[in-house]
Amino acid sequence: MTCKEYIFKLTSGQLVDAGLIERFWAGQHRLMCRRCRTFTTNDEKLGKAVRAYRAHLDGAPKE
Amino acid sequence: MLAQKMDFEQLARDFRPPMLRFAQLHLPRREDAEDAVHDVLTAMLATDWSKVSEGGIRTYLFGILRHKITDRLRHKYRGEIACGEVFEDDLDDMLFTTRGHWSTGVAPGLWSSPDGQLETEQFFAVVDLCVNRLPPKPARVFSMREFLECEAGEICNVLGLTQADYWQCMSRARKQLQLCLNQRWFGGRTS
Image (cartoon, rainbow over all chains, first blue to last red):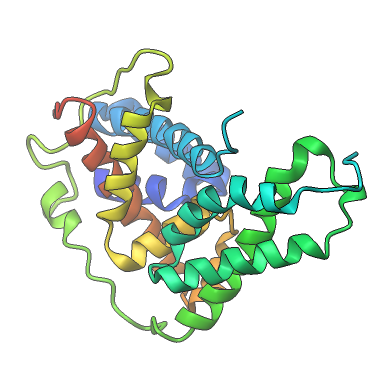
Protein backbone atom coordinates (compact mmCIF):
# COMPACT_ATOMS: atom_id res chain seq x y z
CA MET A 1 0.00 0.00 0.00
CA THR A 2 1.48 3.36 -1.00
CA CYS A 3 1.10 6.57 1.00
CA LYS A 4 -1.24 7.95 -1.64
CA GLU A 5 -3.45 4.86 -1.43
CA TYR A 6 -3.45 4.89 2.37
CA ILE A 7 -4.30 8.59 2.61
CA PHE A 8 -7.11 8.16 0.08
CA LYS A 9 -8.64 5.28 2.03
CA LEU A 10 -8.33 7.24 5.28
CA THR A 11 -9.73 10.55 4.06
CA SER A 12 -12.51 9.06 1.94
CA GLY A 13 -13.85 7.24 4.99
CA GLN A 14 -13.32 3.77 3.50
CA LEU A 15 -11.28 2.56 6.46
CA VAL A 16 -14.26 3.01 8.79
CA ASP A 17 -16.15 0.16 7.13
CA ALA A 18 -13.17 -1.74 5.77
CA GLY A 19 -12.74 -5.45 6.33
CA LEU A 20 -10.15 -6.98 8.64
CA ILE A 21 -7.52 -7.53 5.95
CA GLU A 22 -7.71 -4.00 4.60
CA ARG A 23 -7.52 -2.54 8.09
CA PHE A 24 -4.56 -4.80 8.84
CA TRP A 25 -2.59 -3.52 5.83
CA ALA A 26 -3.55 0.06 6.64
CA GLY A 27 -2.28 -0.46 10.18
CA GLN A 28 0.93 -1.96 8.86
CA HIS A 29 1.46 1.05 6.62
CA ARG A 30 0.92 3.42 9.54
CA LEU A 31 3.51 1.53 11.57
CA MET A 32 6.08 1.98 8.83
CA CYS A 33 5.31 5.52 7.65
CA ARG A 34 5.82 8.43 10.04
CA ARG A 35 4.22 10.97 7.72
CA CYS A 36 1.06 8.89 7.28
CA ARG A 37 0.98 8.27 11.03
CA THR A 38 1.14 12.03 11.63
CA PHE A 39 -1.51 12.72 9.00
CA THR A 40 -3.80 10.16 10.65
CA THR A 41 -3.38 11.75 14.09
CA ASN A 42 -4.08 15.17 12.60
CA ASP A 43 -7.12 13.78 10.76
CA GLU A 44 -8.59 12.63 14.08
CA LYS A 45 -8.12 16.14 15.47
CA LEU A 46 -9.69 17.53 12.30
CA GLY A 47 -12.72 15.34 13.01
CA LYS A 48 -13.02 16.75 16.53
CA ALA A 49 -12.59 20.28 15.20
CA VAL A 50 -15.32 19.75 12.62
CA ARG A 51 -17.71 18.43 15.28
CA ALA A 52 -16.98 21.41 17.49
CA TYR A 53 -17.52 23.73 14.53
CA ARG A 54 -20.84 22.01 13.76
CA ALA A 55 -21.94 22.54 17.36
CA HIS A 56 -20.85 26.17 17.02
CA LEU A 57 -23.00 26.56 13.89
CA ASP A 58 -25.94 25.11 15.80
CA GLY A 59 -25.20 27.48 18.66
CA ALA A 60 -28.13 28.47 20.84
CA PRO A 61 -28.55 32.14 21.69
CA LYS A 62 -26.49 33.22 24.67
CA GLU A 63 -28.40 33.60 27.94
CA MET B 1 -42.33 19.89 28.96
CA LEU B 2 -42.86 23.41 27.68
CA ALA B 3 -45.75 25.49 28.88
CA GLN B 4 -48.44 25.75 26.24
CA LYS B 5 -48.01 29.49 25.89
CA MET B 6 -44.95 30.03 23.69
CA ASP B 7 -43.40 33.36 22.84
CA PHE B 8 -42.94 32.65 19.13
CA GLU B 9 -41.62 36.11 18.40
CA GLN B 10 -38.87 35.69 20.96
CA LEU B 11 -38.02 32.22 19.64
CA ALA B 12 -37.81 33.57 16.09
CA ARG B 13 -35.57 36.45 17.21
CA ASP B 14 -33.30 34.08 19.13
CA PHE B 15 -32.98 31.28 16.61
CA ARG B 16 -33.27 32.99 13.22
CA PRO B 17 -29.66 34.31 13.13
CA PRO B 18 -27.89 31.00 13.91
CA MET B 19 -30.27 29.08 11.62
CA LEU B 20 -29.64 31.52 8.79
CA ARG B 21 -25.88 31.24 9.31
CA PHE B 22 -26.13 27.44 9.16
CA ALA B 23 -28.38 27.48 6.10
CA GLN B 24 -26.07 29.81 4.19
CA LEU B 25 -23.25 27.35 4.63
CA HIS B 26 -25.11 24.89 2.41
CA LEU B 27 -27.26 27.14 0.24
CA PRO B 28 -25.10 29.84 -1.36
CA ARG B 29 -28.01 32.01 -2.44
CA ARG B 30 -29.19 34.07 0.51
CA GLU B 31 -32.79 33.88 -0.73
CA ASP B 32 -32.72 30.06 -0.58
CA ALA B 33 -31.27 30.14 2.93
CA GLU B 34 -33.87 32.66 4.09
CA ASP B 35 -36.67 30.57 2.53
CA ALA B 36 -35.46 27.48 4.38
CA VAL B 37 -35.36 29.34 7.70
CA HIS B 38 -38.77 30.85 6.97
CA ASP B 39 -40.16 27.33 6.43
CA VAL B 40 -38.83 26.28 9.82
CA LEU B 41 -40.34 29.29 11.56
CA THR B 42 -43.65 28.58 9.85
CA ALA B 43 -43.47 24.96 10.99
CA MET B 44 -42.99 26.25 14.56
CA LEU B 45 -46.54 27.62 14.52
CA ALA B 46 -47.99 24.18 13.80
CA THR B 47 -45.83 22.32 16.30
CA ASP B 48 -47.29 20.50 19.28
CA TRP B 49 -44.91 22.03 21.80
CA SER B 50 -46.24 19.83 24.60
CA LYS B 51 -44.09 17.07 23.13
CA VAL B 52 -40.86 19.13 23.01
CA SER B 53 -38.69 19.42 26.09
CA GLU B 54 -37.47 22.87 27.06
CA GLY B 55 -33.88 21.88 26.42
CA GLY B 56 -34.71 20.32 23.07
CA ILE B 57 -35.96 23.37 21.19
CA ARG B 58 -32.67 23.98 19.41
CA THR B 59 -32.26 20.34 18.43
CA TYR B 60 -35.84 20.24 17.19
CA LEU B 61 -35.58 23.40 15.11
CA PHE B 62 -32.21 22.51 13.60
CA GLY B 63 -33.52 19.05 12.82
CA ILE B 64 -36.31 20.58 10.75
CA LEU B 65 -33.83 22.98 9.17
CA ARG B 66 -31.58 20.12 8.06
CA HIS B 67 -34.52 18.48 6.29
CA LYS B 68 -35.47 21.75 4.58
CA ILE B 69 -31.89 22.26 3.40
CA THR B 70 -31.56 18.66 2.15
CA ASP B 71 -34.85 18.98 0.22
CA ARG B 72 -33.59 22.12 -1.50
CA LEU B 73 -30.25 20.52 -2.31
CA ARG B 74 -32.07 17.54 -3.80
CA HIS B 75 -34.04 19.77 -6.15
CA LYS B 76 -31.20 22.11 -6.92
CA TYR B 77 -28.27 19.81 -7.59
CA ARG B 78 -29.79 16.53 -8.77
CA GLY B 79 -28.39 15.78 -12.20
CA GLU B 80 -26.01 18.71 -12.14
CA ILE B 81 -23.09 16.44 -11.40
CA ALA B 82 -22.93 13.62 -13.95
CA CYS B 83 -22.23 10.18 -12.60
CA GLY B 84 -19.50 9.63 -15.13
CA GLU B 85 -17.91 13.03 -14.66
CA VAL B 86 -14.21 12.72 -14.09
CA PHE B 87 -13.12 14.49 -10.94
CA GLU B 88 -9.73 15.99 -11.60
CA ASP B 89 -7.83 16.22 -8.37
CA ASP B 90 -4.62 18.10 -8.92
CA LEU B 91 -3.94 18.17 -5.19
CA ASP B 92 -2.55 14.63 -5.28
CA ASP B 93 -0.02 15.68 -7.93
CA MET B 94 1.35 18.16 -5.41
CA LEU B 95 1.26 15.85 -2.39
CA PHE B 96 2.63 12.61 -3.84
CA THR B 97 5.33 11.43 -6.22
CA THR B 98 4.49 9.32 -9.24
CA ARG B 99 5.28 6.28 -7.10
CA GLY B 100 2.72 7.25 -4.50
CA HIS B 101 5.08 8.43 -1.75
CA TRP B 102 4.83 11.80 -0.01
CA SER B 103 6.61 14.56 -1.89
CA THR B 104 9.34 16.27 0.13
CA GLY B 105 8.26 19.07 2.44
CA VAL B 106 4.47 18.90 1.97
CA ALA B 107 3.20 16.47 4.60
CA PRO B 108 1.78 18.40 7.57
CA GLY B 109 3.65 18.23 10.87
CA LEU B 110 2.02 16.88 14.02
CA TRP B 111 -0.56 19.28 15.37
CA SER B 112 -0.35 20.33 18.97
CA SER B 113 -2.76 22.64 20.73
CA PRO B 114 -3.61 23.50 24.32
CA ASP B 115 -6.92 22.19 25.60
CA GLY B 116 -9.80 24.40 24.59
CA GLN B 117 -7.91 26.24 21.88
CA LEU B 118 -9.87 24.40 19.20
CA GLU B 119 -13.17 25.75 20.51
CA THR B 120 -12.46 29.44 20.27
CA GLU B 121 -14.09 31.97 17.95
CA GLN B 122 -10.70 32.61 16.33
CA PHE B 123 -10.27 28.94 15.49
CA PHE B 124 -13.81 28.64 14.15
CA ALA B 125 -13.15 31.65 11.91
CA VAL B 126 -10.16 29.80 10.42
CA VAL B 127 -12.20 26.60 9.99
CA ASP B 128 -14.89 28.65 8.27
CA LEU B 129 -12.31 30.16 5.93
CA CYS B 130 -10.83 26.76 5.06
CA VAL B 131 -14.25 25.18 4.44
CA ASN B 132 -15.22 28.02 2.15
CA ARG B 133 -12.01 27.59 0.15
CA LEU B 134 -12.92 24.03 -0.83
CA PRO B 135 -13.86 23.41 -4.47
CA PRO B 136 -17.68 23.45 -4.90
CA LYS B 137 -18.28 19.73 -5.38
CA PRO B 138 -16.15 18.49 -2.44
CA ALA B 139 -17.58 21.33 -0.34
CA ARG B 140 -21.16 20.16 -0.96
CA VAL B 141 -20.33 16.55 -0.17
CA PHE B 142 -18.31 17.42 2.93
CA SER B 143 -20.88 19.81 4.37
CA MET B 144 -23.75 17.36 3.80
CA ARG B 145 -21.76 14.65 5.56
CA GLU B 146 -20.29 16.60 8.44
CA PHE B 147 -22.74 19.47 9.03
CA LEU B 148 -26.05 18.04 7.85
CA GLU B 149 -25.03 14.57 9.15
CA CYS B 150 -26.33 12.83 6.03
CA GLU B 151 -25.25 9.26 5.32
CA ALA B 152 -23.11 8.57 2.27
CA GLY B 153 -25.96 6.84 0.44
CA GLU B 154 -28.26 9.81 0.92
CA ILE B 155 -25.58 12.22 -0.28
CA CYS B 156 -25.02 10.17 -3.42
CA ASN B 157 -28.76 10.03 -4.03
CA VAL B 158 -29.34 13.75 -3.50
CA LEU B 159 -26.37 14.89 -5.58
CA GLY B 160 -26.51 12.10 -8.18
CA LEU B 161 -23.03 10.77 -7.38
CA THR B 162 -21.46 7.36 -7.63
CA GLN B 163 -19.76 5.95 -4.57
CA ALA B 164 -16.38 6.57 -6.23
CA ASP B 165 -17.30 10.24 -6.75
CA TYR B 166 -18.30 10.47 -3.09
CA TRP B 167 -14.98 9.00 -1.96
CA GLN B 168 -13.02 11.35 -4.22
CA CYS B 169 -14.88 14.40 -2.90
CA MET B 170 -14.54 13.46 0.78
CA SER B 171 -10.86 12.67 0.32
CA ARG B 172 -10.19 15.97 -1.42
CA ALA B 173 -12.07 17.87 1.27
CA ARG B 174 -10.26 16.30 4.23
CA LYS B 175 -6.83 16.56 2.62
CA GLN B 176 -7.31 20.20 1.71
CA LEU B 177 -8.77 21.08 5.09
CA GLN B 178 -5.81 19.54 6.89
CA LEU B 179 -3.37 21.43 4.68
CA CYS B 180 -5.29 24.68 5.12
CA LEU B 181 -5.53 24.40 8.90
CA ASN B 182 -1.88 23.37 9.06
CA GLN B 183 -0.91 26.52 7.21
CA ARG B 184 -3.29 28.98 8.84
CA TRP B 185 -3.51 27.77 12.43
CA PHE B 186 -0.97 25.11 13.38
CA GLY B 187 2.14 26.97 12.34
CA GLY B 188 2.71 25.63 8.85
CA ARG B 189 5.17 22.95 9.93
CA THR B 190 5.78 20.22 7.40
CA SER B 191 7.86 17.06 7.19
